[in-house]
Image (cartoon, rainbow, N blue to C red; front, side, top):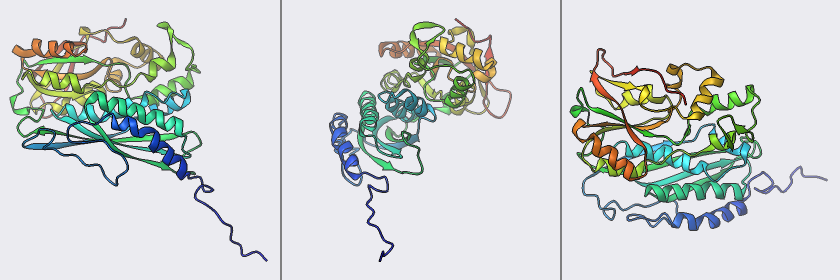
Amino acid sequence: MSTGRNRVTYKDAGVDIDAGDALVNRIAPAAKATARPGADADLGGFGGLFDLKAAGFKDPLLVASTDGVGTKVKLAIDMKRYDTIGQDLVAMCVNDIVVQGAEPLFFLDYYASGALDVDAAAQVVEGIARACKEAGCALIGGETAEMPGLYAKGDFDLAGFAVGAVERGQVLPKLGEMRDGDALIGVASSGVHANGYSLVRKLISVGNFSLTSPVPFDEQVSLGEALIKPTRLYVRSALAAIRTGGIKGLAHITGGGISENLPRVLPKGVNAKIDLSTWLLPPIFKWLAHEAQLPDSEMLRTFNCGVGLIVVAEPTKARHVIDAFKAEGENAFWIGALEKGHGAEPAVRYGHNLRRP
């Protein structure tokens, strides 16, 4: 006679504890390599510790940021390309921290899937660790979750959490110091970064494009390779430029593009006037604009259009700021200036049109 009860293990339910342990063992060296003053980056505890005093801060304010990579993660899954998406995750968080004048200190990640693929997950986390090391922040912990029934087989999602610190009195933006005539400096992006991919993927589907086919503007590069390029990390270059003493504000150009992100760092009564003829629209954005039939106004509120960071600088020090970015390997260039606003809220006004290659 049956009791109606069957022995069911956690693994039978779709969660493999052994796979999780194998992942932790594999990624531990990568996390350890991100150690910095204030953190030793050991994994396995219930929480990560950070010593602000050991990091050299005297009277700091903490700055925290959390983000994901949106549907760009689906592109990585479709391409089976897992080694770059971790940089996107880190960059989306630490770039938001550095634009407030803060130094990123530590990072934690969250990786969720239907069934853990140890190799794929390890490539993702190893990419996170490499980006953390480049940004100078320690990977001090994270979480891996298997949720069968919530995620389809092969799918996963990511979230990142970063904390930084800035000495009191050095927080950006310095709204009270911004004036009509302050210089606007653009710092080039590496591509689409991690915003607008729902539109990108829709275009690929509607146009029946293949991710493995060469892009029209470069036969040596596939469409997938052009779109998967990771978000640029601006931490080291921005911190170097901040040390020139000429920066009043920084804007990370993410979802909402230039039109919606730049006003976030401007005071009331001040607008930004940007000359769109001062840089060349990268080919990938020209392709996106053509395929989606998007006017400049929509491009500028959807994508970064080739400018991933915008600096508000003291005019007399703008050249030093540009040189500091260039010394760190960035392409920085003048794109406009602040002007008196005519409305209650700051806005962006554009001159000329986006220059197509």
